[in-house]
Length: 301
Length: 301
Figure 1: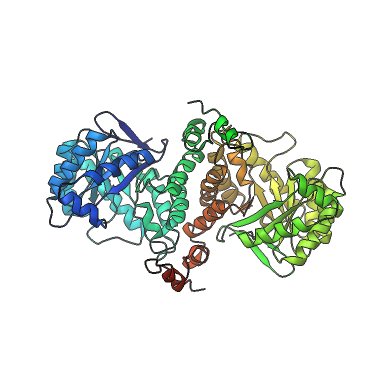
Figure 2: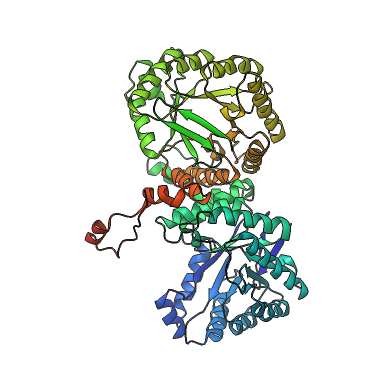
């Protein structure tokens, strides 16, 4: 049973097949958020702070932190964001950048064992990021594309993931510290995108024994009612063995699908988390509003 | 590829691994519906009629019809209900009774190839129902319990299903006309109920090559937010290979989960059904309300 342990100074989160699904909050990312980008660039981190707290309150177990702002001091802003977020919440963080210097600045600022986002199968990237993973003893998201781009053939994507896992082992990094992103394609363009991901997750789990993550909302790109489709997809991905996702915990439909999938997978003992999230108001409150009795039950927790 | 074909006089529905999931509307059933029971007993079928039309409008491809009213003429009421429903809608029907005489009266009244609900692994039931299935050339729901009751051991439930499929073959009924209900247990009581069903569905499909159905909402018995949990479960059951369910199509969350699962499974070509169900209002309507453009796209259908 593969356990990927991610931690802050005081809290540990385990990604694993026998664990509740881990939601990595994606909101702290200036890409496509002009106002947030402007604020972060100008040293105003109030929205970073409120986004962090809101995502944790909504159920995110890890927060992704990205400071990719064009023409800004990304390493400095990322390090500052990380220190700030670690001062107000105890959830572990996922340090996210396409710039290796920013990843290193983030790791240097971070307290605990981070999840680094990301390495790909590109040779240059592998040789720059894996030594950082080893040096800081963190875990890393491995994206299954390489120098030839993203393949529509899942065998190619599987082989890229395999290459990353093997190369990591050469650096002394265990497979349990690799979290593979099999890459979710827009199903409006590629009708088999859902089946592809589910088949790939199964192979990654059975043959490479690695945990997996994804940008779950990519699947619904270009389609109406994206939240509804993402909710169906995430519960199906979980049943195929996906163990985490980088996504928006503020979407209540998605979080309900995750909590429901945890129950169905048997990873919510006595359904305690489900009952906590959805139990009806207290009996006396219900009676005051004239409802027909209360269906609340004891949570045992 | 196993196809179970169910038909009315003018319409065919195919249950199959490569087909959109089939929702069998459960509403026309007086069990637990006192008013409906009273009305049906007194010859008032107005609610049967409106329930039929509402379920079809909500997306049910087949309607279950049950007339189980204590101390009433169940065979007569069932036959009358079936004739009435077939006069106002063209969807095929699932003839549902625990009384063999009622099943036969329903079959005699029905036009097309019905789905009979149900046979169990109990010897007496097998020997009374299977000849009817053969005589009328219908398909049948096979419930995986027998004279010893419902086992919590999925191997026992699998073996009951296998016995029914084999006994049906003795009667000249092909496996493609058997739709097995693996029995969904309340997960609040049995934590492994979800995994059990998913594992059983996989075996039924791979080893017995049969389609499957279930009472999806049993899973959430006793828990809060049942619709939310049922929605997560149904999409996961579909990804494990379940091909139909007897459930309530008026629950919009459940139907959204089914439509989403059809997309993810690749069984909604070009996402046409999803887009039809959820596309945003027409561009001119949207503009009149001052929305930011229209994200509507052509369905190609």
